[in-house]
Image (cartoon, rainbow, N blue to C red; front, side, top):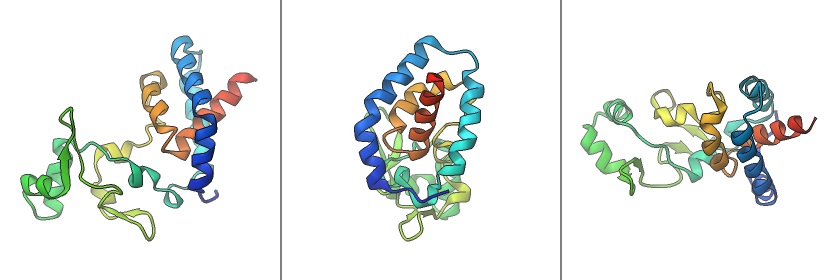
Length: 166
């Protein structure tokens, strides 16, 4: 496994994102046989190559959605009421989702890219980048977005496209 070079990753994205998004759109329309197995097998390869702790781009440039259970659990950890936690750390977006007030995430330690609340992190974080979901077609729209932020998602889609050409 090698460290993620964010500068190089962003250049790759800039050059290849249209091609990869078109591939995902094609997968959504045609839904090839064995897609979920291919995604699961490819995901195993991806995690042998990508070390999230050398990247943390998701925590630096995106915000998870905090659901009510997340807010209750995390506020309890800080000995705050859910209301006080929300007021201090979160903001409501246009559609009513609760997001971080700041980027990078206030719980990210920038020295080592580790989450200070990892054990109780939001469900959205623990599932990210959503590669291992049972039905890949249900997450194509998520992968289209995440290829621009997550080297693991980018690599998964790139590998799947290469395999589909064989």
